[in-house]
Structure formats: structure tokens, C-alpha cells
Length: 214
Image (cartoon, rainbow, N blue to C red):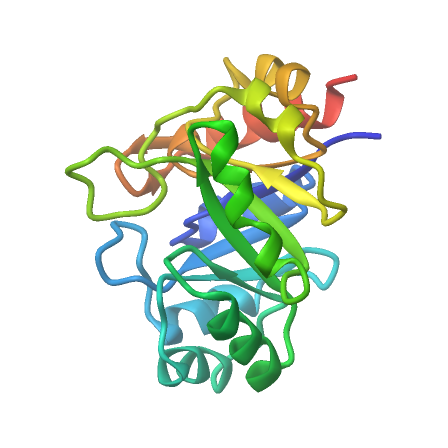
């Protein structure tokens, strides 16, 4: 079974189309003003109209209020809401109930103790995403080209499916899969030619490799 692949931070039609043509499983769109990959709800609507139903549309939010999520959903539908901030279990539950969409909740991992924070979320989350901790001076929780010790994923004991993120690219993907045991991967900066600008060639290389790994 090939890896499931999420290309996150898509901002233009060319990157979207090459991702779809290469067999991407999820496309992620960022609604966070501090991100270089941030897009408006209206641009998302334009891009979403080009996505086939077989590809899941994921909206990435960081500590959002309901108004922001509603603004996006009032223009075009999402298949998942990804929460990448410091949202509490109560807040995650509230978002899930209010918008009736499955939730992907991200966690930054740097040591085995970080997994202790996950359990309170299990009843309200459909998938987890495990990322590296951002640099101290970063204003963004993800998309920072930073990896973490993938072997730490052997400490994950919960039954919820999960995606591996954090500095992945075509050069380290094979090692990441072997060391972590992941079945789903998320990539953003690893398929960019410059900050926030996706490179169709790198997207094609990454997805093609992901789909052929044993």
C-alpha cells in the first residue's frame, strides 16, 4: 500500500494541478495571516473548484475563531479542518460540533513526553499530525523546514490515524518512513523553490517517490 500524501500550503493552480495529476490524497490550504502560504477565502474558492472529489480539501487554521472558519465554509466546502495552534480539547470539540467536519489536530514533537498531551484530544480528533517544534524566533507553528527524531513515533500508542510532517522532502522521505512507520505524510516547504512558492517539479518528484516506496 502506497503512502497517502498531503501537499500543504497550496496557493496557485499550477501546483494544485500537478499534485492532482500525480495522485495526491489531500491538498492543504492555509488560513493564517502570518504564514507566507496564507490565502483568502475567495482564492480558496477558485482553487477548490478545480479539485476532484477523490482529493480531500484541508483547511489549516491556527487558534481560529468561528467567524474565520465560517467565512471560508460560506464560500466553498472543506473535507477536514486542521488545527495547528494551541487549541484546547474543549475548543477542538466545539469546532467539530459547530462545523460538523472531521478534525486533524497537529502536535509538535521533540521528546517522548510530548505524547502525553495527546490523550485528552482523542475523543474529538479524527487524525493527528505530528510536526517538529518550530525555531524559537518563528511566528509560524509549521512549514519551517525542520525535522525531528522520527524514531520517537514508536512511542505513539493511540488508535487514531496520523500524518508525519516537519521538514520532509524527497531526499529524506524514505528514511522518515522507515524510522517512523508512518503511512501518511504531509509536506510543504520541502516542495518549494522559495518560501511559500511551490515548485511543480519538486511536487511531482515527492509524490512519485511516496507512491513507489515499499
